[in-house]
Image (spheres, rainbow, N blue to C red):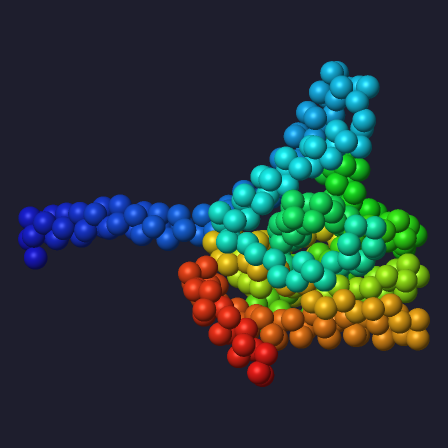
Length: 328
């Protein structure tokens, strides 16, 4: 082969490689964009949750500056109602959110303990809190994980929204005062390492059962349909993240999603106070009630596309499915 031929050959190869580079970058861009979106969307929800911090601090500044003589409880009640309207609007627009079983909540002045399955992000608890405020005029007190206290400014949110420390004494006091209190026994562990099979991951935690028995209040099991299809955690190297969590005690497993799936919270029939039950027996009974709600209402394993399609179900289709579940 002469020099001219070699030059043409090398030039052709070089041109091919140069032409392939933009195609490679374009392919990577097309692949990375949707991946970036599904990993960034959860942070939009987190920012929405964290937006309550500057909002409530602004309210507190205005209260001290202009309404110092006003009734503090009434002031914060009005501030909470505005938050409830925002969250309620968000729930309807993004997830067509619904609640069934509100009639199982006791009337004002009656205490009850709500026990719920913890999704990757507990947005359903925010949605339910907004729904009960607007429809039942009741605020659900919440047990928050201790790592939340490390967030700057969160203490005011805890005080205004009645997020308790989670000690048995504080929980019992809340319930004896006739308030509603919600606890996710699985906590961050269940949020991080649960999956679309919706297995209850409570280990041997019986603290909530001791609280209910000491306060002598009913337990209301709660489950939100498709909560694991809205947000999911990555399954890659999960064993490593389990070890990291056992050391750090903070969420370490990446979350992706923010999918516009249908969310529907189901409040099951109350489990009445029974002094003959031990904390272990009561824990097992409540876990079984949550598992039953999953079996009756949730598609297992969960499917993201079908969960999005649930938003377009007709009323007749929903009634027919619930009738079939009842027969089973």
